[in-house]
Structure formats: structure tokens, C-alpha cells
Length: 297
Image 1 (cartoon, rainbow, N blue to C red):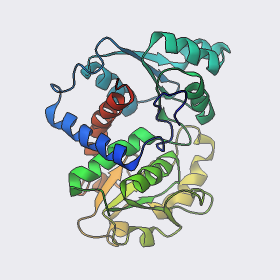
Image 2 (cartoon, helix red, strand yellow):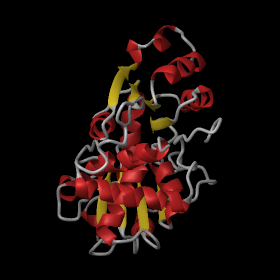
Image 3 (cartoon, helix red, strand yellow):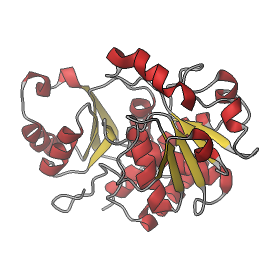
């Protein structure tokens, strides 16, 4: 979504395949030269980082990234703003646009983030909503490129709950030339319109893939149905049995936080196939590249 000439990053479809490739390339440059190169990109600029929901990797990677690029991160919790007392999203967008150069927001409402972008005169970045997690997908693509040297033609199987992460992987993968397969049980699958191969068979999904990807079964807001979700998703656990149906060089990915013994076993999460910790680090580099792109003069 690009509004009123601004660059935004809301669902990942705002950029082209070539622009995505450029972002990944720049993220790799920033990783290799950290923290010297690019430190002055945001000098004199302040960015609002709004977190309505708890966050570890997203908050820290954005806060550190803005600082390393020479900017000033203004970190705000939802209950610290007048939004929590009834001020409209539209008015919040108009006011923040007078103070900061960009707005990064992690929200429990995708609709509110869209409204914020429609009314802001500065770039807005979706740092997670129930519908999309596009910044995570950027880091995931960077991780795949590190491991395989290219993205074009790679195959990735997402196994488990068809959630915001799975949806963003499908969108980003379609732009980057990565075949994304999503294996989920009935009631947990993505909508048929997403650019991914959908199946209810995890063994079918992992056959011949370069990477197997998992996420938590019980996300924030799912606590009331936690036991049912665990029962429904148990056949989709990433473990040695599932990986025996993939290639021997298939890597394992997870966006964290992980719950070893639920969606992934400890031996896999901490094993030789795991690329999980590279993914976590790459949140920093990919988001720095994204901010440079969005705020380029």
C-alpha cells in the first residue's frame, strides 16, 4: 500500500521483485559491515516505534537498527498513548506525521495499521498484525539467501498454523521466486487466494524442500483455545520423523519464540540443521535495509 506518494510496508506487496532483491542485497551488505557502513542514513531523524503487543525481536531489532543508522527511536507502548483513551487512529497518524520521519507499529488490528498508513504523511511499517508479518519474511529471505546463495527456485515448507507468518512468507516468496508450501489442518489453513501450495499433509509438504519452517501453535489471543489447538496441530510438529521425509541438507527455520516439545522438538531447534538464530539476527539487518529504502530522499 502506497498512500499519497509515501512508501509504506504493510503487507509486503508494496514492492516489486527487483526491489525485494535489492533490499536483501543491502541487508547482506549491512550485516557484513556492521556497524560502520550506513550509520548516517537516519541522522537527524526520529522514528516512532509503537508496540501494542509484547515484543522481543521486533522491538529490539528496530530500536537498535534505528540507532545504528544514526536516528532516534521513540518507543511507545499502546497504553502510553491517547489511542488507549479513545483518540482516533486517523488523528494519531496526523499528529505523529508532524513529529517523526516514519512510524513502525506492532498492533492487534490490521485494519488500524491500514488506517494509520492511509492518514499518515510519513512511511508506515507493519511490524506485526494478525494478518501479516512482512518484516519477519524479509529476514527469512535473507537467511535463505545466506544459506543457499540464491533465492530463485528454492522450496520452503511451512508446517503448522496458517497464520500471519505463513501468509507473509507466501507473499514474499512469490516475489522472490521461492516456492512456498503451507501444510496445515482443516480450520487452520490459509485462504486459497494466497500464492502458495496448500496441503493438509506435512509429509507431502516437506518432500524435496530446502527449508522447513514452523511457528508457535498458541499465539497471543489464542489462550482460550490452547488445548484444542495443541491437539489439532500435534501431527504437524517439526521433529526427526518429519525431517526424515525431507532432504538431508534441508534446514529448519522458526520465527521465535519457540516452545520446544510443541511445534518443534528441542533436538531440531538446537541441532545442526537449525537456521533459527541467523533468522533472529537478520531481523536487524533486513529492517535497516527496509528503513533506508522507505526513507530514501
